[in-house]
Length: 488
Image (cartoon, rainbow, N blue to C red; front, side, top):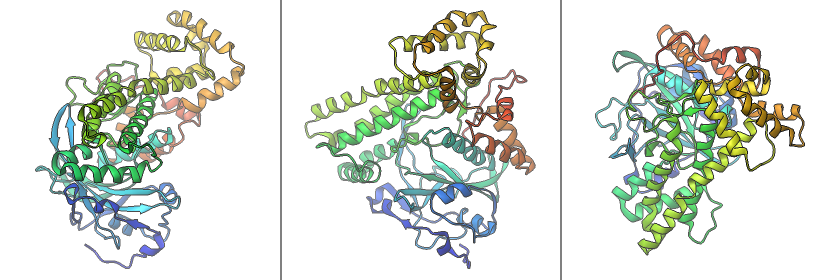
């Protein structure tokens, strides 16, 4: 690793290494792969400020060196985390195969966050992989995670993307890069699966206690592990509802990609709906449609059942009672999800109060949208901005009458209803073809102008600027289904 005169003290790192206090089966201490040259591609100044980090005295060259692993942050103890997971329903041992937890940092509001390098080289968990990442997928995660944050969806964030000047061999040679990911933590359902499978009861209990202390310290139930299960179920119900409301398809909802914090994590083959088709699958490897848009709530429930199974030994000494407690808890997920989804849909339709027929009204609209192949996001934007456009299509007439009658019954004015809709229906989402154009230009032509412009637009999703409304259109020129790839 390089040594430098970098003024680390001026940055304001408040480092911690709490994860290394856990049983050693859960991680491996190690350094990033040596990189001989690096250059900064993009840096998230606004996020750095939120984290209480000041890089004003740090050159781009030193930022690149820090976030490629070339320069060691004093007092940092990088580690690779071990975890397991059900990948497309099949259990396997995994772990950070191309990532390192560089450090933990205490923010000014006393929140402990992870700083992780993704693409930092092979680890003991690489399973024969090279541990590297390509520029395109790292820029993709940066862009989509920033868009999700702006959409008020809980997510990991991206602090930097650094070019390593290595060549990464995939189907073709690609430019290597490292992403700096910020997360509340990287504890996953798969972390608990690994703990009980490899570490046994003591390791499981240590991980559960650590997770409660870090993420849910307010738990005060007599059975704190049942409290943990309930908190994670609640967090995931809220998260998956937000995904469905926004038309977000994660694409790889394996148990190792379900964060205990309730954050969206791992933006490999994700994409947003254009046409509303519930069975939409984007991932090139999801042959059965397991992780289709319509299946996401049920898959989340399945993943949570796997999480509950890991907790059985500490939920109750009586295993029959433990199973009953776990099953009862998991069965609350879908009702909680449904409540969150209906709450969000009311807002998308400009409805302030609750009426018994709301669910039917929503289901009828979605059914029509599927029938006429309506654009998901644009439909809700047009309901706010251009209601008359729906009158042209007779398919909407009967529903429109019910909808207008429903809105007329609330005490809030039509203008207030429209303002509510504009606060929750984005004027732009990361349209798949726009994302691909930006990534192609950046990774193959070293031109970040389109990427940076799109990034600026998706960071203001409720601005309702004319350019956003103009760009937020499906790709009408392509007849091929959109396909996404993990980038591994």
